[in-house]
Image 1 (cartoon, one colour):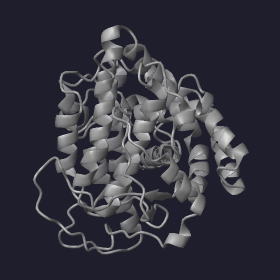
Image 2 (cartoon, helix red, strand yellow):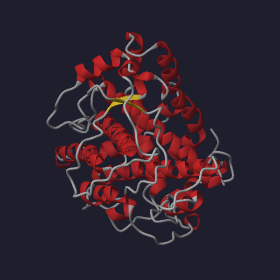
Image 3 (tube, one colour):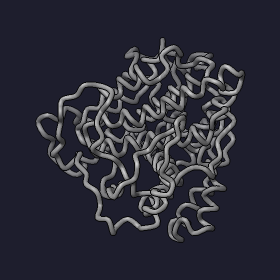
Image 4 (cartoon, one colour):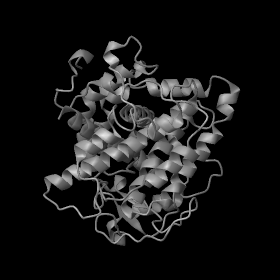
Length: 398
């Protein structure tokens, strides 16, 4: 692994990580929707932030993410990790909305033919479907409608999800905690903000791919410059100075959760729950050095220490479980069907990670109790974060 000093912005696929560590914002709104003020030159300051302990983990990710991304790209093509039964027609229950039908090819999706989804996947999903009153997540009940994320990958659709994101950050996230507060609720907010950063990176990458493909923009498409959108949405000097730091933080949690689920995944391979081809791809991922890198675990270590530091903290974890369920339900307010599909998968991935890392008491959950769709969403969200950081590294170096 290269030392931090040589991981400069000019390096191919690398990032100057200190540029992503910013001072403490005024409050939760600044975690993802806040301050537009320009950051100081952090290299000249003696105190970077209370999150400087994340820097070694960021270095490790920068050095190893490309190899992991290649393995995740192969895995997403496998049946077990590409088919999801989702209620695309569910109603929004959180805000009044005008009926909006998405007729454009970019945002519309349709279910695959029934014979395309292996019967074993349908049977497992039906067998595992259930209701837990105080669970970490509540996935849509399986039906005959399955959607293929390989046929309908994430990307740019020109959909403006700001109304939904404003609701998430201002109504679902914890409002009474600042960014660097010594509490697991502040870490929860960072993880949700990191998920937002990941989706922003997907949008910007989609704009770049549209330009590279020579496609014309419609008159109502106002986001046309990927560099300008990257600077606005994700750079330390943009609207969300902490966006990339939060993306790294979220990715670290995802990596640690997958690491803790390795025995479960190996058992699924041995038992034949996943195919031989899928097992080969999955094995490459589970052998990634990032899953055993102590510096990557620092995000989880801090989250867990704060969650179990006293009875008041651990007893309040029901508030996190309630919020992850609300995050899944607010996705029904997304009026772009492709965005809704990938939003639900991403939130379920984060929910599954928190379920594994914290469980009900803060001491961790049992990965053997995780459902197929939860594991699939976990690996899919790991891929989304890896892909987002790969693109951010490219944009930062350009």
